[in-house]
Length: 577
View 1 (cartoon, one colour):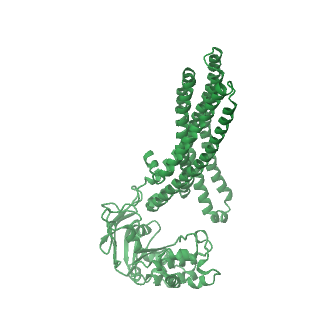
View 2 (view 1 turned 60 degrees about the vertical axis):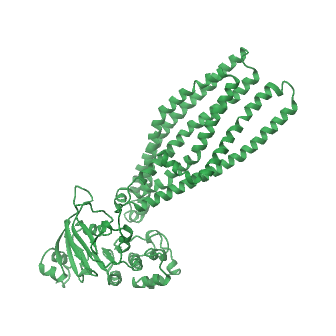
View 3 (view 1 turned 45 degrees about the horizontal axis):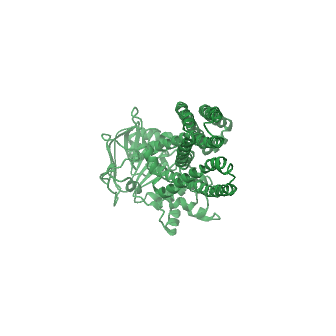
């Protein structure tokens, strides 16, 4: 873990060296005061060297001015190093998240992921900045002050130094408990973020069902867990600091007694004793700094560990010799496909389906039968293992193709449309960011959304809000269709694209979809059977198997499951065929 952490210092090596050099000079200047104090009491004052008293004082003042500038440099540029390291980690983490498979997001809540990117990495930033400085300054001060104390009186110095092992033992004893407690606190913080993200995203549902009190209770449970985890963390921290502070207080008691006895016996002079008292603080303070650094180290190390947990997640696998999918005709074939999200429960079993170029095939059947899973497998969102069959596009196994080239040739329109925060223009151009203004407008026209956009004050530059909240369901759907028009894929997946719309809006959407399907191989999942009567072929999917196949007329004549579904859906109408 340490090696991976140090890797992020590489781009900032020069600035880090300057920062550490400045920190070292701060430590050296810190030793000037006790040295001058000793000379004052032992030489300058007794021998009435008034000019040296003034010169020494001015010299100390000048050095303190230099130390002020050095501290500014360390505080400013040290933090800049930390922020840049945090930024790089955040970029790496976000880029890695983009490469992770769907299965990762199935098992991790958005709020918890956000915590890794924000608060966890902030703690890492603080460690990156303060860690090297605290270690260098404190270590240098301990060595310099210890050396100087030995020059004054080695016996008295060794008496003080004898307390250090006690401090180390106490630190190690409480460190483990504090580390675990702060790690639990971070997990509780992630729980709160997940609860907030879920509640804010679903605020309209909460208000519609007047369940605000229920959401408050759910949030309170997470908050109580955080408070309890914080209590345990601060309890461990309080034990840690109170115990270590007691040991350092013992330092001062030993100095008071031993130093007083040495002065009484004439072993040291008053000036040496005074300088020793001053210098001891230079020894104890960095020891305390190192002790305090333990809390920061625990926070930073815990945050970096959680950062690595995601970074160590395996990205979507791609064959080493994966090739580009080019000149796509659009022939799709599912061969003996078997799949299970959970090994204990099979979703698809031995599915065989061939779709010729430019043809539309509809999948119908009860919910949970495996229709959407087939759609997810085609773009390789979920991976087929060896022995679970294969999916071919133009005779090429999708596992042998690069993910980018595969997905660039597949367009998806879903029931639950996701739009990004931004403008109408931003969301349409998401289909092909390099498209021209004319191409974007043409896509909008073909999706039957252009006329509506022209009624808006800012037109295509209108902000649509989070997830398109300022648009109606039909407008969002047409916007997503325009996005696919602009992408211009050879293969199209329509996953219940009109099931949540009213009849009038459905007509507009269906017109746009019919236009979109022209010349493309299309796989349609539909509950509204009226929308797929003109499909070239209809496949009934039940319990992970294709049980019936044929045109609408053929399946009605077969008097099987499809006819039952169709009759059920149109039981109040007279045109059941």
